Figure 1: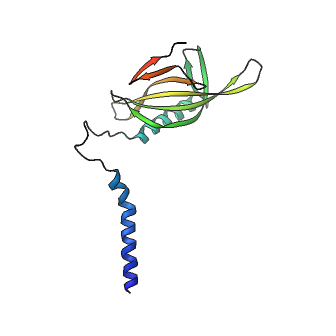
Figure 2: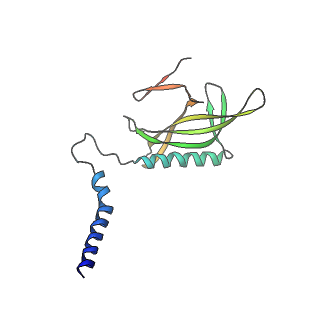
Figure 3: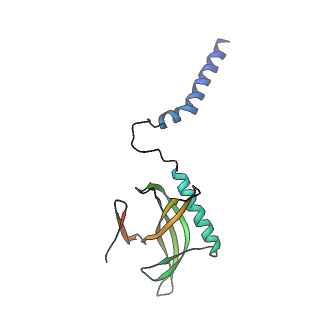
Length: 158
């Protein structure tokens, strides 16, 4: 009987640690940080971007299309990967990066896959939902077109 009680107590302790331990470690310390707590979570930003990509792709014939100012052309893209990092900029704009692939016909007739790194900026709409406010081609084939100085974009001159 004592053995059964001991096992029940140990089980309850382990279950308590399992369900509450991670919450205790993850809690912030109120009053120790400036500003207000952000109510938008990184997963919400990612989901808003993925929703945008899904809808845009569906509306445009199963490809994500983006105009390239530099090359004066439209890229026909396939979604590859949403980067893990989500940033909150000073002006309460949310930012994340997404990789897409494009099939590019070469002069010799062969086809090569190019990876484009596309940056997405989002803002809260009047309804409180995140809305994509800007999209820019950051890199083509790993070659950046601009860099960041703080939250500002600086074009890279060729």
